[in-house]
Length: 130
Length: 119
Image (cartoon, rainbow over all chains, first blue to last red; front, side, top):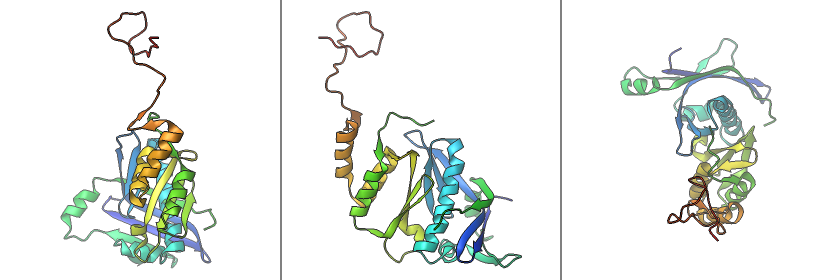
């Protein structure tokens, strides 16, 4: 998958968030203090890691945090993602899915998104009681 | 690699200052793994109301994130006071009042860069 697309599928157990499948571009850069600053602009999130090894964990925690906070303090993951420009689509099994598609007219945005690393995790587990 | 030269700040101190700012939503601190999310009260989209920090050392927030949070929640003075009192760190450096710098006019047998008590 190219980095000009992003998608999220949410699995719930009743009302509880169970797992998240995600694919989206991320950007890293080294800070003045030698930490790794990580940006997930499609979720409006910045986080930080000790190094490349720690970055994966930082991204996982950031995405899970976004989903839990959106459900608990916002209007739910789906609506909060829509506020960021994501659109719903129907999954095979009626589980909610959202995608971020760059319109064809947005050449510049497409070029920018291509500069990111693609973060893919088909099964982010949300095992924390929210 | 992490540079340990800069002081880290107790996460508990940061949480306390953010809570005291009165800007957080009810139960507006959520911790997932080592990531702490602060949620500001209000009706705006959640991505506009959340700020993430991470404990790169257990229980500790790095200086970069500590300062960024302090600016946003208006407790920079408190943070600088805390750093001076708890980390001996002031004006961008650790203060070591009892150590004198080497006297460059004298020759001695110590290696370059050693800190020498000239008394």
